Image (cartoon, rainbow, N blue to C red; front, side, top):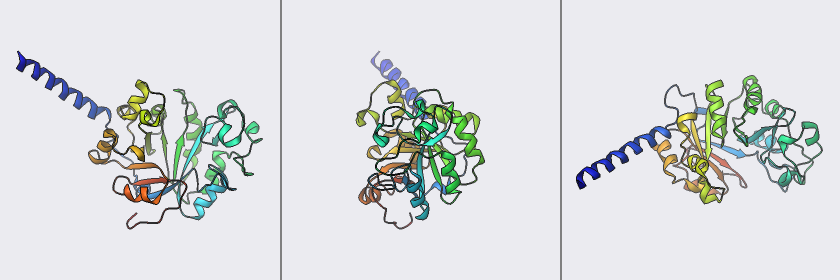
Length: 280
């Protein structure tokens, strides 16, 4: 009797292990070319300093990154009147010192605000693409607060006309699922973190996102993970077993950058200027 119970338990464990491995499996077949995004530094929200005249996600910060030959990570969301703009937070308060949200404002209304203490204003995504013009690769994070990802079609229409190297990423698995169905040859990345240890609201959705359990649906081409939690098993399996590119966010010191050199291909950095290291 005891041996039978043990066998049943072992079979259940084996089945759960297989299901887990299938759930976190990224895109294996027909992978797009990710060469341009390997062994690169990407300036987080541009080469910015929020106490300067080039705050985050500003045209000034993006121009500085292009001049330095650095790839850029940036955030895109859509206004009330359907204009894709470059801005990180859903709310305006932290950067613009004003109430309200991007999604509840028109583009013209947003032009009343400046970024931090600068004269810079919230840029259109099209303005950013025109300025960069393929000079450096872009990581475009698409911000979608809910399961409504209608913004993807609007943003994708601009990306289809852009001829420079880029990839998309998002915390929201529904964004990646949209691109899988509608623009499958775009390199797509799943952003994630250990949300419980970050102190975020914790439920079954955040549990699944932490452990990359939506990969079976979204089939990402790379995983972009909070570098503070590099030991998370799902991330390590995708990197070491499935041999997928890995991006680290957000590195804020040369010491952390050097410590993570063997764990990641792409380094999204902030608050310091990396010293180039060997093969990187």
